[in-house]
Amino acid sequence: MNALAARLAAVRGWRRAVLAFVLGVVATAAMPPVSFTPALLIAFPGLVWLLDGSGRAWRAALDGWWFGFGFFVAGLYWIAYALLTDATQFAWLIPFAVAGVPALLALFTAAAALLAYLLWQPGATRVLVLAVAWSAAEWVRGHAFTGFPWNLAGYTWTWSEAMLQVTSVLGIYGLSFLTVLVAAAPAALTSSGGRANARGWPLAALASVLLAAGFVFGFLRLASADGSTVADVTVRIVQANIAQTFKWEPDQLRSNVERHLELTRRPGIESVRVVVWPETALPYDVERDAALRGALGGLIAPGAVLATGVPRYELDASGRSLARIWNSIALIDSTGAIAGFYDKAHLVPFGEYVPFRPLLSAVGVQAVTGFLDHTAGPGPRTLTVPGLPALSPLICYEVIFPGAVTASDRPAWLLNVTNDGWYGRSAGPYQHFAMARVRAVEEGLPLARAANTGISAMVDSYGRVRASLGLLEQGIIDAPLPKALSPTFYARWRDLPLLTALLLLGAVLVVAAIANRKAKSGDR
Image (tube, helix red, strand yellow):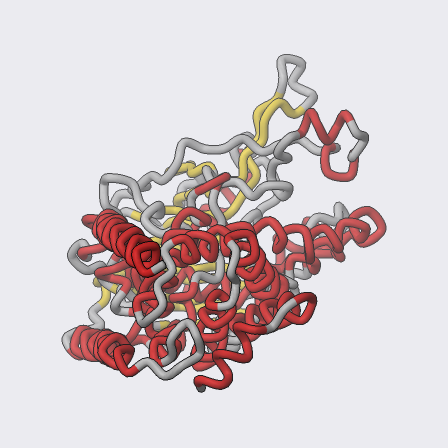
């Protein structure tokens, strides 16, 4: 190990960039759907040893950027699939999506590496430095510029229901900190000069103890779970599996809706209290079409409700042109009345609105500026329907944002409608579903998820999948609604404890770095 550490630290030139890129790609293997967590035991020690040999702040930042570029290129390749649904118009954007988005996201890993370098220590402490810097960068990535907390290090544990329980206390960012600390711990057994470091054993042992403690906590928490459900509340989740290339074709709209209708009418509908259709499953203006609402209400039993994704429109003064459009969820009761609306608040850049629209229009990029921006809703809200548990609606990737999936009036369950049909049979839908499951654990709330092409599921308050339909399958799920838990520690405090801990650790590491530099200066 010592020889390997010294060799990696000494790599220079283009080989160093390739090495960092490859280490980032290796780290991606730990993310869903592969979820090979041991890959992080290669990637993060390798990153530590690269930073040992950086020698300059700019080189450390570059090492971090190449690592992040490899991580995001391999982890987000599926973005290109969306552009292939209309290849004649959007295929030219594929290089920008496959390389440009990862290049921008890699700036966060570059910042983490730079911060780590500025606080670098010769011994085991540098592993803690990297864990703090990486976790801080992940948190910023999840919040800055609308946020994109995709493939956080902690998501490697979605294969383990026990380890996921840690997020009920620490949240996914806290689990990421623990994960990076454990993964980088082997590097503590070497010094920054590539020599053996006997003083690194306590930190490596501590990381192992923390990992074991996470598993024990999870096993004990699951052992006390009773798996109870809400009495007389069965949810039917409809997955029609409509290919994105056909979803908005004018001559296919009616047959697409009829497919949802056929699945909804299947035997057992008389005992279903909530029917869930995916994002924009109903492409018509349900708000203004009373006859359509009446027909939909006639599908379900008295007292039941249909929750469906719909576009919602506002016309201009002439009544002929669109003034505003929302991506929404409508709740339609058995009388055909609208029992509630939710408008998506966290919009997808370049998918639902165009950032820098005036600038792009000025340079003639009409391929991305020639449509009406969606209007954002006010944010998380709790919808209530008489006789049913209150729910928190989430559209598409709104479910990936930790601590932002419920309003102040706590619901009894999470409802996520999405359309991952854009991404075909790729890693994207698996990653999206994995993140949705973690929100259930963090909040202590069950999650019902309806996806156009999959993955649809009923997930309980511990993140356990009670029933599911796989990717590119057609069918329905009839599942009782699991009970909500009391608010978890994370639901009460969100990321405040973690941020406080990171700030305190950061302050201690700054003081240690200053003292270390003074000691080196005194030795000269």
